[in-house]
Image (cartoon, rainbow, N blue to C red; front, side):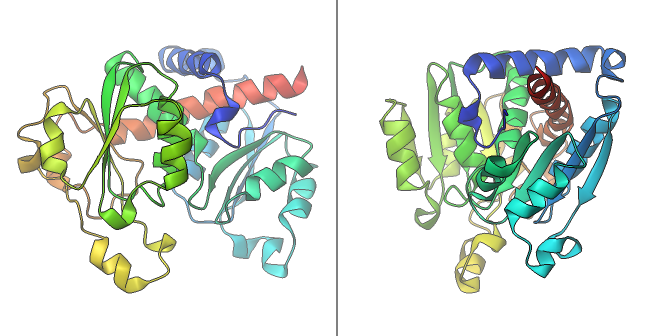
Length: 306
């Protein structure tokens, strides 16, 4: 049974193929409107979500399928103490494919070991978020018409940001990609990620605390929020939460074809005044999430039936 737990579960060729399918869905939506007729997606969200959950549901509906599931742990038997393994075995009796978000790192891996249907990791704690990464890659591909030969700035919470971890891992497989890692010292990327992905693969990168100094060389600026839910200490969160706020003034020296991305939700890190800048692509990024999840659902269902 094929699952998507980590972006590295997919080869570069598979990612390219899914991006191509997503672009075809955008161009020819009617051709996909009954591809999943009679199929059911279960969305098991043990942690709050707006975009990821709704985009999965919209994706399945637009493929002609149906959706079951829950949007919070308290509305499931997890509130009674049921294990992830038992929940997955139960839901697999009702659905053809499962999208699961959980606050504990590794929970989707456990689920995949016990599941009789494909499991998609829709985010596990501060670890991975592979479908957001697919969304990011589709967005970059549509904006730049390539996934190589570019400088990518990642700004904000790089320590706990699972979207950042997955994107760095994914883009490290494309040629001539340089990362500019912009964060407070306390929120730098984890050492294991630096050593196992960047250093091991000889990927060019720099770490800095200065967003404005880095701005002129960036092709992509990926902003992230400082995540209150990942902090153990409220005082640390309050001290760091507004470390970077992107404003029109800070974009004055940026490239004219810069693409500004954000996995959302936004709190304070991008001023609403930036929304009207044509380089702001984070709401287009939201739309792309539906299309790439449609492509992923089609791929996993096809392989499970092969």
